[in-house]
Image (cartoon, rainbow, N blue to C red; front, side, top):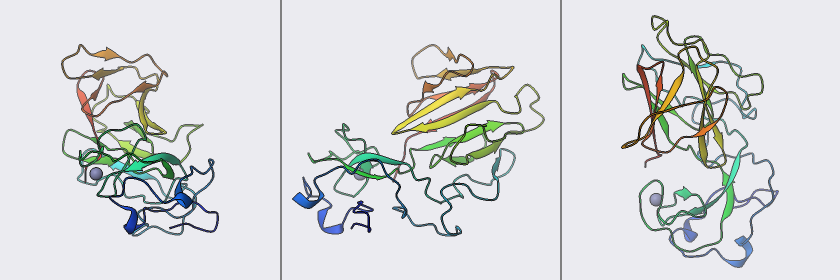
Length: 226
Ligand SMILES: [Zn+2]
């Protein structure tokens, strides 16, 4: 399906499971704005390009879950899809969602799907459909766009900074960036010694890895699932 600008907005049902799209779809449109989302907003106001009027807050002390904002951010990525219709990076041999092999095909540019989720210690989940800023009193970053999830961590953990760490999205990559926090942020990967993040330097976060804030608050990153 295409909109007026000729952009692919979803995988047509008849194409799912095929190894290659028909000739008219074998192109990757140049970077440009996409209006419709693959998953239309359920309860969101008309799209305002990812800058809602209200803060998105995820308080670690409650069961409120992230991902309540469903407006498209305007970000697009080149993608291939599996027989079930999940999008993956063009070089992915297996679907990042269901693990099925991805048939050979030409990538198409699509609205970026959520890249996974951050999992907090008490079970809260922050969907990475947009960036996130975590801290005791998080605020959007001056250069931040689109509006991020503001993940408010417990105020009684005074060793956490107000703006402690940002989790940003760059194409298909998830990046963690310590915001000059006083307690620091470490990246933990299974089977490897922890890496202390240099303040303000982005670091790629892989599924299965976790961030340790000030030595005792863990935020795990898990890949997208079906
Ligand atoms: Zn899949």
